[in-house]
Length: 412
Ligand code: FAD
Ligand code: DHB
Image (tube, rainbow, N blue to C red; front, side, top):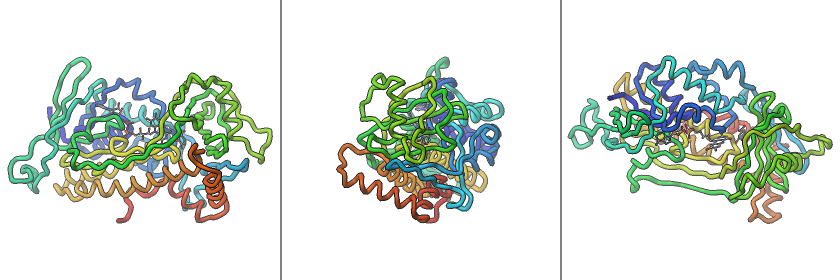
């Protein structure tokens, strides 16, 4: 079979791209190696920035988000046993965020795709792609050297049907951190920029009302803590832990005691989290990584397949969304006018915003965590910078603008 755009991966990037292409009348096929239940239950991000909310609404995929999501106008920073609120709308000209879990966004997009969209095949593992290296001439038929361009081809293995191929005009590599698509970019052309961090997050999902009506990001001498939520009855909480931590070493009581200690504030001395049954405990390593370029011939990478951020700035999912908005616009231009101008600019357009989010995620991570290699000097610098954010409108606005999300296309 042949399709215009072969999409590898049914995470936020692949699913939203499929929706945007469907809305524009461009056919595509989505191939996902996991089953539907797995994809819909994978616990991941929870915060949608303003631009992501706007994109989901305009794509016609925001109805349940608007009904069940929790709009948030700010976050609370806790440090040195003090509390300071950052108010987003007043610092950004009205921007805010939405608490709506990645699991819910994925469920909405999968349901729409299966109801009226292009084919979406679960349990279909892509093993190899080929033929992406040709760049079309203006008439769309010739390769770079005047010979016919090879046809981009996806080889995949379907659970029941076995080995299968799909030919495409373009391939969108939306297959995440462990994906195979980026390997089709020749090693000599691929540049990888990477950083690891000397700590991880222990994440829990608890049947307990949230700590507070906004998210709390806490700096403490015991390490970072984050109090987030999934609904008025379900909390999502994170603790900084050493790399290599075994979740078995963190029985429920230890998790709650540690969260109480790290989130303590003199503004409310008797304050404690409301406890409840913990559903899932997992350890997440932290990493920054960018793979450049995001385009090779007729292969376009989007989301975690091209870049990873540490989760502190809540940017991973939102970056994936921004990439596919840029990609959909470029594919629509190609489809409607024949021009490849936006496709040619795709990698540069995305990377400008990607590097801003990389910087913000790195800076938030370094600002809030207790690095075992740091001396008291670095800790004083962190507290000084947190004070600066608390007392300078400029510093607070810089945080608020980045947290609520920069425009999808940044000026060059
Ligand atoms: P993914 O969601 O990873 O989707 C890629 C899809 O491709 C997957 O469904 C995968 O199964 C599929 N796939 C992979 N290989 C193949 C193949 N060979 N063939 C077919 N399909 C394939 N971000 C935040 O902002 N906040 C958070 O708290 C947060 N927590 C996270 C926790 C974890 C454990 C992880 C891994 C990520 C977290 N992130 C978080 C990041 C955020 O979830 C990602 O940035 C986001 O999922 C990126 O979407 P994506 O569509 O690019 O990739
Ligand atoms: C969540 C995760 C984050 O990394 C973050 O910065 C905020 C919220 C969450 O899972 O709710």
